[in-house]
Length: 640
Image (cartoon, rainbow, N blue to C red):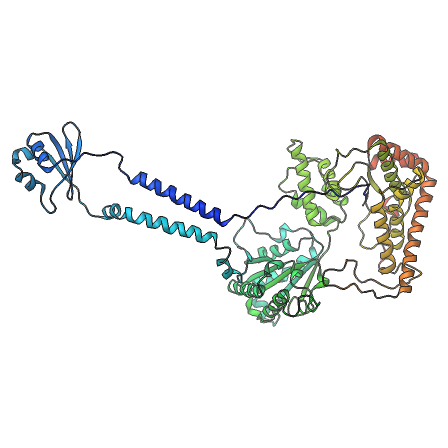
C-alpha cells in the first residue's frame, strides 16, 4: 500500500483544559447547606399546623353537664374534646386519676356523663415510644450523617493510603454469560488456540496430567503485533475453562509509594489461589518486566521490586495450585530473562497478523450483528486488507456500519466497506481541503508517477486505486495490493518498491522541473527500505551477508544505542544506500520516459475525476499498450 504526504503540516490542536478538582471548602459549604435544609424541613413537618384552644377542667365539667360535648378522647393526662358543633379543644386532667371521678368531683351527674362518649387511647407500644423519642433522635442522626459526609471528602487524601497495597484486578465471573468469551468468538490464530487448549484441559481436569507426572506450564506469554487478539485469547481461555479471570495491566502495579507494587502482586496471587482454579492475566507486562540492571533507578527501583515479587510468586507455585498466569506484550525483546525462563513464563505463544482466510473469518464474526446487504462479499474485503490486524478489521466493519447509518440506510453495502478500508488506513476524506489549480496538477502528476512505475515494473504490486483527494495527512494516495499473500519478500521486489516510491519525485522533476515537499514521506520510505536491505537483510554486494543491525525498532528508554561496526563500514553503508536510491531514481525515470503518454493520460484523468478505480485505471493502461499483471506472473517464493 502506498500513500503520500503532500505539503501537509500537523495541526496544532488546542487541548482541552483538564477539569479542576473539587475544593474541600466547597464540599463543606454544600454539606452545611444540606444540613440546614434537612433541619428546616424537619421543623416544618414536626410543627403543629394550627393552634388548638385549651379549656379548664371546670369549664369542661359545665359543658358536659349542659350536654354540649359529643366525645372526649383520653390520652394519658391529655384530653381532646369534640363539641356538638364539631369544635375541638384540649384540656388536662390529674395524673393517675379517672376522668369520671374528676368530673364527678366537679358536680357532673352520672346521667349527664352517660350522654358523652368517652374514648381511651392506650399510650404504649412501638409508635408511642417512637413519637416521643423521634424529636431527640432525629437531630443526632442528622449530625452523624453530616460528619460522615465530611469524612468522605477527605478520604482520598489520607484514608485511602491504607488501601494502596490491595490489588486492583478486575475479576470476570465465569457464570457471567454476557461477558463470557470462548474460542468460537476468536477467528484465526489456529496454532495459538491449539496451544492454549492444553491450558483449558488442565484447568478442567488436572488429575490426568498430574497422574502421569506432567506439569502444565505455570505461565503463558502471548506475543504479537498490537491488535492481533492477545487479550481476547486470554479471555477465551478463561471462558472455555469456566474459571475466574483476574485481569489487570502491568502499569497498575506501580505507584509513587515504595513497596506498593510488590504488595499488590502478593494480594493478587493470594486472591487467585483462593479462587483456584483461576487465570491471572497481566496485560502489557513489559511495563514492569523489562530487563533489570539498566542503570536507571538503582537496585531499589520500585519497578524492579515489583518484578522480583512476580518472580518469587511464580516460582513458588505447586502443581496443585491450579493457577495459570498469562501475560501479553508486543515487546518480548525487552523482557527480563528470569521472567521468561522455563518454570515461569515457559510457554510462548506467537500471534501473527491474520492471512486472507483468517481475515475473512474475523470479518464474519464482526458482521454477525450487522444487517448486510445482498452485494456484500467479505472474501473480496479480506483480499483488499493485507496487513490488517483483528482490531483493524473490527474498526473496518464498524466504520462501514457508521457510514451506512450516516446516510440513513438500514443495511451495510459493499461500497461502505470499501470506503471504510481507506478510512481505516489513511483517515477520513478532507473534502474541505481545497487545492489550488497548480497544487491539484502537481498532485495528479505525482500520483500518476507512482501508479505507472508500479504497473510497469515486473516485481511491484498492481495498483487498485489512485486518488488526489486528501485523506488524513495524505494529500493524495496510490493504493496497491499484492496479487498473493506472501511472508517473504525478495531483493527484486524491494528494488521495485523503492523505484515505485520515488515515482512521484521523478514525475514532479520531469514535468515541472522543480521539487515540492510532497515526496517527503516517499523519500523516508525508500531510504528506510534501502538501509534495511544493507544493514539487516544482507542484500548488498558491497557489504555482503552481514547483519549490522539486530532490531528494526528504535531504542527505548533505558536502552543504549550501540554502534557495532567501524566508521569504514558506516561509510560503505551510506554509499550503498545512496547507490540503491539512485538506481531507483534511474529506474523510475526510465519507466516514465518510455510511457509518457500513458503517464500524462492518467494525470489528466485524475485532474478531471480526482479518483480512478482499478477497472477504469486498467482501461487507460491497456489503451496505451501496457500489459496488465496476472496472478500467474508472481510465483510464490521457493522453500529454502
